[in-house]
Length: 140
Image 1 (cartoon, rainbow, N blue to C red):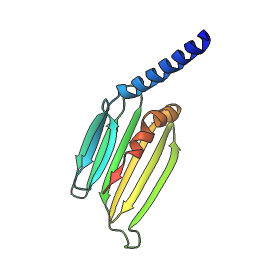
Image 2: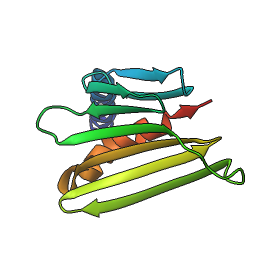
Image 3: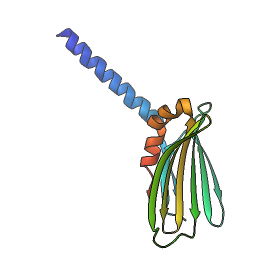
Image 4: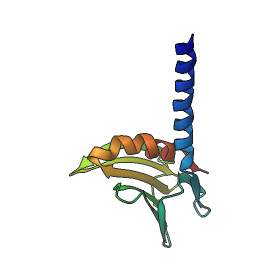
């Protein structure tokens, strides 16, 4: 009986620690009203935004020393009318960097989110950050 209570206490403690760890990194939302685009990112990440006449580029840089970043590009393009909306998602590795590219072409605007990390850190970064970042994307 004592082992069961201890086991339940141990499992509860591990779950509580996991939740506390996940919640210790708060999340912010980057909103772009010009292109009606929203994306969430960890609050301890850096953010740099560059805006031009027909584009916006956002660089989100992960924690120091982790070599993790997310680049968001929103570009107005002249596309054929039959391509009102298309979506692409692909993982690619170039050199020692692995990238997950998610792109949507909608009504003449190209939205691209490029999540990148060192090949060794990519899976952990995907689980800890990239999946939630990608799932938070809202267009329109």
